[in-house]
Amino acid sequence: MQKTAFLTGASRGIGKAIATALAKEGYNLYLVCHTQKELLLNLIEELEKEYHISCTGFVGDISDYHFVEQCFSNIRQLDVLINNAGISYVGLLQDMTPEEWKRVLDTNLSSAFYTCKLAIPNMLQQKSGKIINISSVWGNAGASTEAAYSASKGGLNSFTRALAKELAPSNIRVNAVALGMMDTDMNNCFSMEEKASIIEDIPAGRMGTPEEAAELVLNLIKSPAYLTGQIITLDGGWL
Image (cartoon, rainbow, N blue to C red; front, side, top):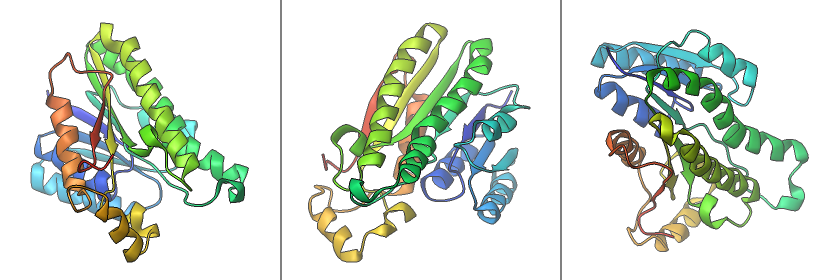
């Protein structure tokens, strides 16, 4: 039986790269995006045609539990869950509204609770499963003017470690990838000068690519069964 994976934030950037890597491995996919319906449909068409796998797409707000319930309503087998959806807010905390704070926390952290809550019963029934959360180095270190984002990713890291302990006896592994400065649309909020200044501090001398993040995710999926509860950093030696 072909393996299946559920991936949030799938329409572009890191999510698209992960979806492509999984399709190459023969996974049937459940792909979620928030608003980029056309991009998601184009990706599904490409993957199904190129790799002869099955893709199901969902368009909606991953921070809405009822939407996530709908996504999982017809899923009977699930081998891998990847929580990649995320948004950022760059600005002074004092200027951030409560609604903006809640939006970041709900999208980056609460959504992982929703997907895990609904995915775990399938994995328990199979007595196996892998959950990978896409986090950030700022979840470890914190970033000035990104307090909400840092808090959400720090929470995701602790969530990962705690859930790994809970699920290890059931042969379900939970790990996270803490990404550094990646060449994605999320970082387009920074000017070329700001990006260049950041890159000067990165020993590797460049930003990471979505494909490198996808390669690490795939390696985690294939990693030894004893590897769980870990936050793996991919940042070019930055922090």
